[in-house]
Amino acid sequence: MELTTFFDLLWDDFTSIAPAAASIRSSLAARGESVSNDHVAFRTFDRGPIRLERLEPLLLGLGYERFAPYAFEKKRLKAFGYVHPDPSAPRVFLSELETQCFSGFLRDIVDRLVAQVSLRQTETPAVFWSGRPWDPVSRSEYERLADESEYAAWVAALGLHANHFTVSVNELSEELRSIEAVLAWVESLGFGINESGGRVKGSPELLLEQGSTLADEVEVPFEDGARKVPAGYCEFALRHRDAQARLYPGFVPQSADRIFESTDRR
Image (cartoon, rainbow, N blue to C red; front, side):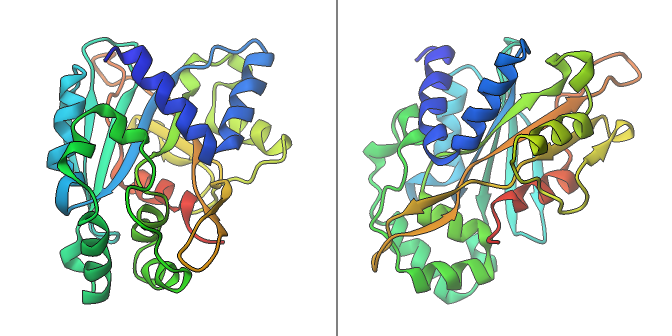
């Protein structure tokens, strides 16, 4: 599959759970801005056919290379960043929940869900926009999962989608070439901002600054009726150059930890 096709199909699916991202992108384009995708991120469980080691080969097959490992001790996540030889290709961030760190209840629910996923469903990149590949959980199960891990509840309810696309602030006009300027403009359009850890995560000294909207709430079917839950959101990233004048290619775990909270229940 060509990268352009991959990201076009991914975007079409993503906007079904993040309509605000489509609106922000359209509004930027209407200003005459150059809208470039810095990176896209995925969430999964460390069990069954959807664990990271099973999904990673699909990215490698698209030409990506593993860049660096990341650990999130508080949220019990491990992740890898991926870069492509084509510098215009968005970076990819793939994380998974370390389920062994949680209760038997959470592990039992996850095992029940992933048992419904066949190996065949994970053989092509289409798995990244396949949505929920298992029967719905109940609303009470969702709440109990979220009390332990908002991340677990998100994956259980929504399945496999991109959870955010990221606007490259480096490519915007001078007027919007700071995270705070972009966030202020986005807020003026009526969208909520993730304030966890401050509006701007990171710093020039860390070579990466980030900010994000709060996730759109979309209606999701549950075993005992539909309800709205936080789904996808839009991130903004500004990368800085290191002492060798190289644009920083990676991610900052302490900032990403707060960005994850864009999908927490409100």
